[in-house]
Length: 271
Image (cartoon, rainbow, N blue to C red; front, top):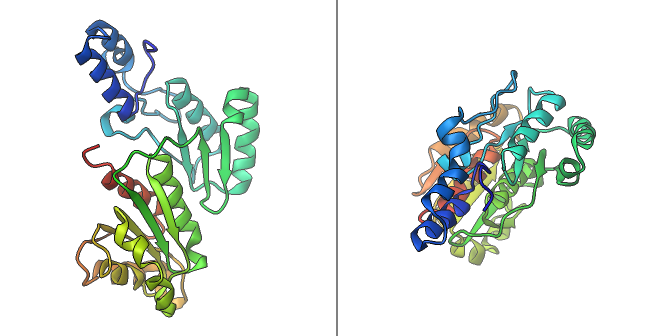
């Protein structure tokens, strides 16, 4: 036990409560572990330009994720350091372009060896990650399926998010309905998944087809891929919202992070 370390991931909190119930940890020790931020402090670190939420891991089971677009590399570095110093074991930064990631890497190197050695950039997903993914702990696996190679940026954002949140992830890429035999070849993967993220642009038909094949929740994620009348993903979004397949829900255009996050939550219900 590390008194005062905060926030705790959901699994750590469960272990701590089990230890209290078993009598191996006293209630005072548990309060020392949880109390620093939740009982005495405001529950966030005030950096002036940002207030990182250091209690989110306990409240929601997932610690704070940084949205990188619109923030400078220096701001992201400061938020990351505050989260890590509060005890967060992994940090995700979404919508991070390569140039900003390079600058962030240099800033983390200036902060500490620990910060820079724990950082990796995933160019396709446009995400920066600090820390290692946890051991998969969900009911089964999250399947991320995408219609075409042009959709990989969004599919990989979903896949990496779900993996970093503790789900096993499997992939079925370039399985769009223009060559439906490619999708049908993945029937076993589809049938055995716990939850599926279906990523598609153009007319967005992939989600409906998968919804008609799967026995699990399907999260449809429209992308902005397509020609003029696709309207930057609006056509795919409306098609997915109007899906006749049962069990299909929809996230916003290009929101791979939101789809992966929701998929992992579903995969961990009751865990």
